[in-house]
Image (cartoon, rainbow, N blue to C red; front, side):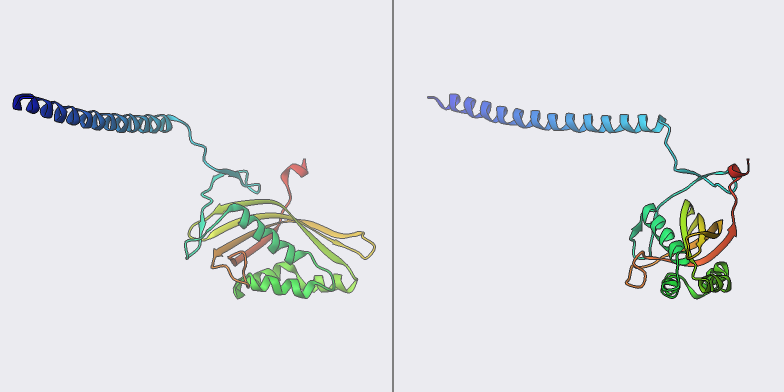
Length: 216
């Protein structure tokens, strides 16, 4: 075989090798373009679509409120709305569910989840002299969280909690009952044995609440 033939074969092989790589590069570029085009199309469609914003209804005023539910502590750990709901439910249960044997320990739990300034506000709302009178009659209390609303999440968490309380006699007769609206300002903190929820009440306000639908 002549030298010219060998050169022709080598050049043809090199050309085929180069063509193969060029085809591969072109295929990769085509796939990238298709992916970018698909991503752009999705963005365009998403931009035209209506986005659902979390909306809650304030039962006290009837206003619709858009809420960002992201609650993050100083360490960057996030609290879900369910965790906040559970904390408020536990807080109000400890505050208003009692009998002569548990009233002290439940108030101690409240103290662990509350700063001293807010604890004073909580004690005033609980009307401890009246509670002492009920316990003297061997009564017991019960609380039920009926509605829950996160109104702010930054810089602090602000919650409206609607709840129903009852006081029962030893014969299970209702001595008194009422509905309340509590506004809690809550600070996310690092979880600990003292505060497993990782939430701390720094302000507490409470007022009687009457559902307008019940008036009709």
